[in-house]
Image (cartoon, rainbow, N blue to C red; front, side, top):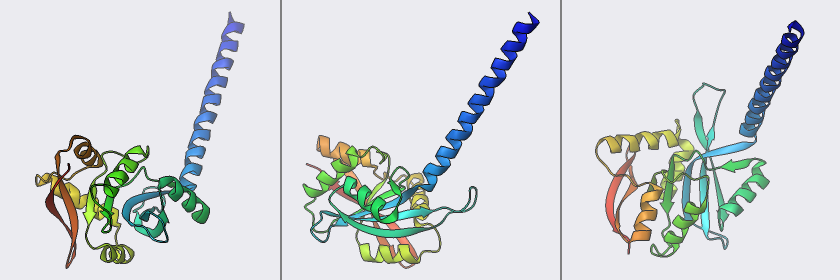
Length: 214
């Protein structure tokens, strides 16, 4: 009996050691995954250039060590026809995989697009992207160049600034639309309150207008 107990204890300890090794391996894989990926917190979409349909301007989170405060976003712009091309181009140039799973806001600034066709198609393109959360806020942007200049010179993370602004708006009773709200309006032909960013002296503010989807 003692021999059986000894064998059992040895097997149990071996299993624990094995599982602990697996946990360490998973942690190491997660760490490598973070090191090999860039996480966008801001996605600004505008009319494409050089024969491409869209221009994607990304605010990439710049993290310090774990537990320390985030730095301001790094800005880059890419002219692509879709998200797959964006991912390929980003990996080719930056040497990292691009993740859209941590977006704090999607900004639309498509002045040349027909809102009932091109923008609808782009919203469905967002819907097909498995990384983009359907609860991500979507805002229109009237002054793209001013916003990009602001993003470059900001002293604090702009994604956090916008997120705090939207949270304050919700507490004030503002119905700030998520991606799923736009998609529902498109599919059902209903109304959606569209919010847009407007430049003010000390930063930006949220303004609202009613947009009817038919």
